[in-house]
Length: 159
Image 1 (cartoon, rainbow, N blue to C red):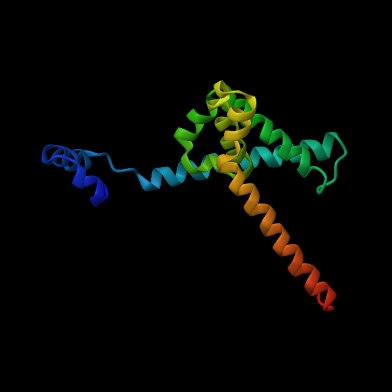
Image 2: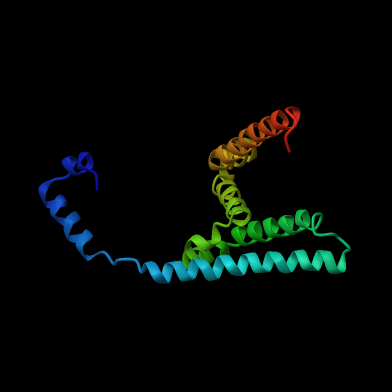
């Protein structure tokens, strides 16, 4: 707890805070790392399986199979978020569920579900991009900078 917040507490509250902090269970780092590794690996393996299905049964090639694979992973993540199952999975798996596509879809979907009572425009539309908006803006800006660098190098005769 920061010292500013600690100054606002009474001495009894400060004593209780230190008492509670001393008895707080310490997280098992090795167990959390193993859970994240297994769950993240399972999500990635499922993504590879989906890509294989699209390439084998729907005549996609390795490059074009990526788009429907990502779309299916997003749809599954949003459905699991809507049914409340994603939070339970994430509670057990920890960092393994924040693989970019599924974690990002969960973030957007959970924010929109949380604020649906405020209406579609101000509630769902306005709040689902609070966290996701900065990620999207950073991604677009980074892509722009990389494209400018690539065009500059190509025009100078490189690559």
